[in-house]
Every structure is written in C-alpha cells, then in structure tokens.
Length: 93
Image (cartoon, rainbow, N blue to C red; front, side, top):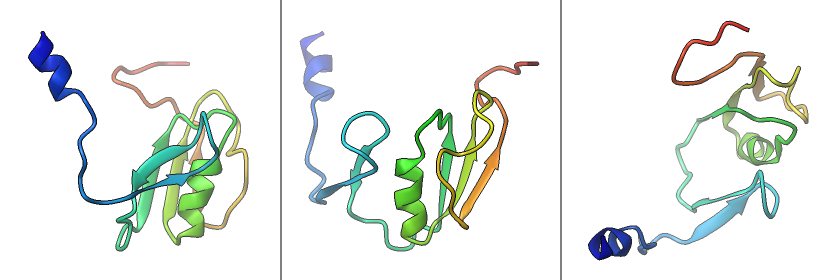
C-alpha cells in the first residue's frame, strides 16, 4: 500500500503548469504545452464555461456537452454545445 501511495504523488514533467479558467471549481492546471492543440472536448460543463472559454480564446474549437443545462454559460464563436448526457452507460432521459 505504501508503494501505491508513493506512486500517486505528483511528479515533475519538466513543463510548467498554467491555470485555465477560474481559481477553484471549473479551473484546471494544465501543462503549458498547448501549441498545436486545436480542439477541446468538455463533457459535463454545468453552469461554468470559463475553462472552455480560455481554450476557445487560444484558438481551439470547443465541443461541450451537458444534459443538465440548456447551453454553455458563456458564448464564443468556437463553441459547439449539445444538450446530451455523456457517460459510461446509455441514459434515456
């Protein structure tokens, strides 16, 4: 068990991290190595689209899906939203 815990600790990749989106929920630390990334797929956006907006502002096409909301929380020309449930099982709602 101790070996497993050791393996789960953060390890340096040699690439600095940047935050995309807000501090706290809805924001993510990602490697500052996004050159050439052209798309972002985001299932389960809920009521915050700030991370996705940051991706769109970097020129990415952003594909969002969430059945619990009617649209992305913010608008951007690079957004494509579908009101769909995305999960490991089929859900007929």
